[in-house]
Image (tube, rainbow, N blue to C red; front, side):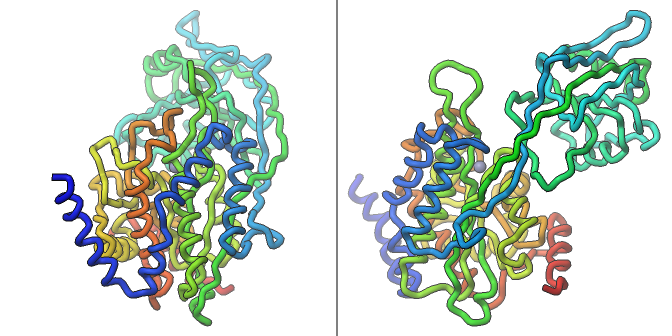
Length: 491
Ligand SMILES: [Zn+2]
C-alpha cells in the first residue's frame, strides 16, 4: 500500500520536472527542505526571543539574514552599500503615575474611572481636560453613520465599535479628522512602548484605549449622540527615545539591458511578537511559521537565483521587513522611501505562513493560496507555475480578499505596485502563540511550494509585459488608480 502510493506520487513529479526548460529545472533543483529547515530553526530559536520590534533578537535575526545574502553573493541594496535600510523611529513610553480619567453622569449618576489600570493613553503631550461634554459615537452595524463634524469637534467622544462594520479604520480616521478633544474606546491594552517614525509629527488627537469591562458596560448604557456625561482626563507627557530599525535588502541585477531597470520584490517580515508579558511556562512566541517560514522562503529563493549561472531579465530584490506585527511598519517605510523607483517595480511577492499545512480549516498539503488572488495577473502566473510543479494554487472564498490588508503586500499595493501575499495556511493552531515552533513545519511540502514560488518569480521577472491589476474587479479600483498615477510620474 505504502509503496504503491509512493509511486503514484512520484511518477507525475518526475515527468513534470523533465518537461521544464533546463533553466527552470536548474533553479528548482537547489531548493532543499534542509535549507529551509536550517533557516527557520535558527530564526525561530528561543535565543531570538520572538523577534519583537525593537529587540536584540530582531537585530540578531537581521544580522543572520544579511550574512546569508553575503554568503550567496547578492549585492547589498540598502543604505551606504550595506544590506540595511535604516528607519529612524521613536520608542514612546507613557508614564501612568498621576494618570486619571473619569466619565460621569450628573447628579451622582453612573460613572466610570481609572487611575491607570487597564488603560493605554495615546497622547502627544501632557493633557489636562476637565468637565468636557461627552458624545457617544456607535459604529456597531453596517448602516452606522458618523455624526456631523460640529457635533464632535472639541468634545470627548466615547467610541463604540464592532469588527463586523466594514471600513472601520477609515471611519475612525474620518472621526479623528473632525477634531474631537479626545476619543475613549474599548480595545486591547498593551504595556509595550509604542513606535512612531521619527519623521512624523508628534501631534494628533489623544486616544484612551481601555480593556475595562466596566467601561464597556458604561458605554453601552449611554445613548448615542450628545450625552449629559462629563469627562475629566489628566495624563503626563510621553517619554520618547530615538532608535534605528532596519529592513534587510539585497539585489540580483537582471540580465536584460532594458528590463533590468525594473525590479521584482520578494519579501517577508522578519519580526514577530516577542515574549508574552504574562503566563506560565514557555512565553517566547517563536514565530516559526509566522514568519520565519516567509524569511526562509526569501533566503532560499535568494540562494537558488544567485547560485544559478543564468540570471532573470528583471532585477530581483530580496527584502525582509521589521515591524509587520506592529502595523506593517517596515513595508510602509519602504514604500515611503523606496530604494528602487516604485514605477519600475514590476511586482511584489510577499510570503507568509509558508511552512505549516495544518490550516484551521483542514490540511493543505500540495497547495498554495494568496491574498488578492485575482486582484492582479500574478495569480495566473502562480496557477500555471503550480501546474508545472504539481501544486494546486487556490483562492479562498473569503480569506483571499479579507487578508489582503493583513500583511506587507498592502503597503506596496497602496503605492500601485501589483502585490500579493502567498501562503500555505491562513490561520493555523499555534498562530501568535509560544507553540509556533520550528519542528511543527512540514519541510518536504515547503520545498515543493517554494519551488512553485521560484517559478512564479522567475516567469514574472522574465516575461516582457509586467503583471497588472485586473480592473474588472471593483476591489482593485484604488490600487489601479495608484498604479496609473505611478506610471505618469516622471522620474
Ligand atoms: Zn506574519
